[in-house]
Length: 335
Image (cartoon, rainbow, N blue to C red; front, side, top):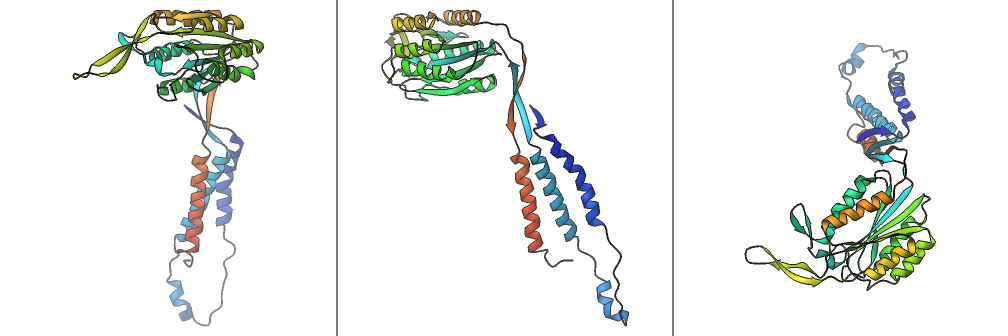
């Protein structure tokens, strides 16, 4: 993380503050009054000047410093990643329906569900594409944009970490809506190549857009779609709870992937259909897509910028308000 300013020229105004303070503190010729007797002003000469005036002045100068810094637009930059890239924009459409809970994959020696292995494999894919804009769409009964196409892959990985089954209504699977939403996110982008990677483990049984209609729209827009059917063949173990010893109890669910439709989607758009029935197979699929969609890139630097002007503007206004309140209340009559 780095600290910088969007309009640093405003900081030059800070150099004027000492000059203004000096000019304000200058005193003119001392005034004089003629008295017939010093005894008339004896009580006044013994008074000491209050420091209240100095405190109020310092509050005003402090407020001015904070407000000038705020005008300079302080920023925090981070999420640095290689930029420019390949000219390839990618949208991943990920199935979040309830059937993704089936634990027919293994990850680092542990039995995991389909969503866990999909997220892990997708993260590796993203790491290998640092110069591409990548977005994420999730779908089940409905489709949602989880992350628009972005070069801030740190942000994208944080979004993936938060994805859990049950986040959206997972009772049905709207493959057509998921694909259409992903294609729509790529529609306005001017790039050399635009692709969608669609991962699902079931059949389309929801949504107002059929998968093949969405595929035709993708083809018309020049978007290539790679489809992946996720799940073993036959039956898959599904957790049903735990026994008295805290161990998972499993049932069996028939794997029912509409491979014919997924294959037609890929064919219509110039992509390719894959069947991922194991962790190794899914990794090879992403590796192949990675190798198929490569172009030479000239890498620059990209940084995510967060404006933090309010961190300085609010304290500045607070000091100014405090100076006004004190000047009109407890210190109003003090010399």
